[in-house]
Length: 67
Image (cartoon, rainbow, N blue to C red; front, side, top):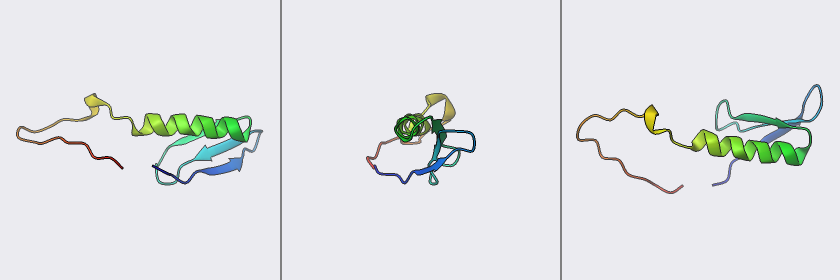
């Protein structure tokens, strides 16, 4: 999966990175490389399903799809 990342200088120092297609997925780093590594981790956590977040009605079918 490829996502567009916005990387911009922070007002104080370092860089801020965010993913426009994933609202609220944002991270920072002192360098561009650190910001990119941090946003990659943030994306992985953002996309990681949490079983407690789902409530299923009886008869619902659950499957997976690769993107």
